[in-house]
Length: 332
Image 1 (cartoon, one colour):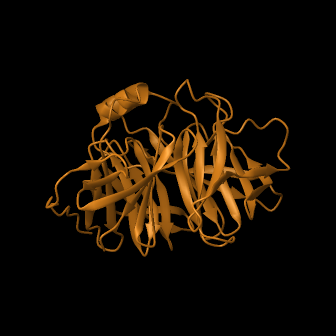
Image 2 (tube, rainbow, N blue to C red; image 1 turned 90 degrees about the vertical axis):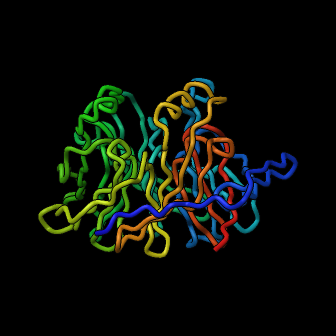
C-alpha cells in the first residue's frame, strides 16, 4: 500500500468577506457556517429516511455547555434542523452522545453516561426524525469508547481511545495502550466482548468497506488497516502521514478524515474558544493509500474539525466544541 501525500499548491488568495463568509482556503470556498447545538462532534449521512440529511451527535464538552446532549437532524434539502425526539428510552438514561454509526434503520450511539467507567452503546431505530430506542449494550470492555462501526454480521467494532480513560500521559508519551473491541450478540440476547487489536496510540475513528476495517490513530498519525475474519482481525497494512486524524467517513470508496494538525493548539482551543486550532481534511484512496488534503484552515473558519462528509458538491465539517458545522463548496 503506497503512502504518499501530494503537495498542495495554494493558488488563490486568502480573503474574508464577513457579510457572506466567503473564504478561499486551499482553493475551496466556504459557503456558510451552519449554526447548531454545542459540541457537534460526530455526524452521519442519512439518505434512507425522507429528505437527505445529517444526523449530528451534539454534546456540550466545555463547562459552559454541559450537560447538553442531543441528536440533531439537519435537512440538506431545506436547510432546516430539529432536535430528534427519542422515544421509549429507559428512565435512567442521561444521554451524553459521542461517536455514532448508521446501519440501515439502526443508529448506534456511544453515550458517556457516567464517568469514568460507564459508556454504553445505545441503539435506536430511525423513524423519520424520531429515534425509537431498541437496546442498551454494556460490557466490561467499554472503558473509553470513542467511535464504532458494525461488521458484516452485525457485530460491533469500537475503539477504546486509551487504556485509562482521559489519560493525558498516554497521549503525551505515545504509550500505545488503546484497542479495538469486538462486541457480539449471542443467541440468548446477551452481548460479549473481546479485544481484537491492541497497542494503538489514540484511535478516534473507525469505519469499514466490505471486510476491510480502517482504524484511525491520531497520536501515531496513521490509519491501521485490518481484514475482518472469523478469528478476529488480520493486520494488512497502514496509511501514514495523516496527522491527528479523527472520525473516518466513506465517500465513493474513499476515506474522509479531518486532522488536528497542531496538537497543542487543539488543547488550547479546548480550554478557550478564542484560541484557534488548524484543521486539514484528508481524502484517502482506500485501495492504494494515496491521499491528499481537500480542505485546510488555520482555524479561522473552523477549529477542532472532527468529521467530514461529502454530499453533492459540498463538504460538511463538524467539530468537537463550537456550535456550528462548516459547509464548503468543492471545486471538483
